[in-house]
Amino acid sequence: MQLIDTHVHINFEAFEADLEAVRDRWRTSGVVQLVHSCVTPAEVTKTKKLADRFPELFFSVGLHPLDASLWQPDLDRQIREVATSDNRVVAIGETGLDFFKADDRQWQIDVFRAQLQIAKNLDLPVIIHCRDAASQMRQVCQEFWSEFGQVRGVMHCWSGTPIETQWFLDLGFYISFSGVVTFKNATQIQASAQMVPLDKLLVETDCPFLAPVPKRGKRNEPAFVSHVASYLAQLRGESLNLLADATTANARQLFRLPVLSAIN
Image (tube, rainbow, N blue to C red; front, side):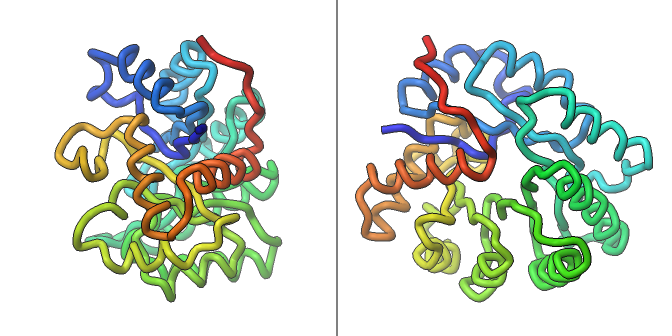
């Protein structure tokens, strides 16, 4: 069985002491590729070094909505330069909207649109963070699609309602579920996970955050994506092998990931 963890943050300090052991565990658990999501372009230098160490690691470049205050015209240039100079860059992001306690909503929208434009121009998908902003996200995307055309992408660590899930499926997005779907009270997320077509489904850890049951409360790591996949397969009434094969194929299609030879 092969799996792809489509959203990790292994550059965080939480992994500095034992990253080689973490790597050994993800390989043992069947994780054959990972997508590291940068939250600011300043992370790229460290992320490239990680990709040099781990050939199965690919990455994105972009600015997280909670860091939108850092946006300036030069960041647009930096993101474009990184994305076009390293073939391990497979997406723009993570970007999006986070309106939880936000007082910069219009600025977040402007920064998000700028990154949508980069993704459109470079024919790269976007990794989208959306918190308390589903209706606004839908509107921004609909307006952008109407003006410039569709952009490929994924709604990452998705926690929306089934109605909201359908909005983003209609926009052509993949939907990615993290360990949150395994939580006891995550009933609306579970309902959403049941309705996503198999060819639009992705799995992720968003590590080091949000470890799935039965690892909840511990530091999350890529190996734990197997628990997310196993839970989703049971929830959806599908075999684990079917779900693993489909989500791996979906990740490779969205991010245009190569099929790697065996890594030792």
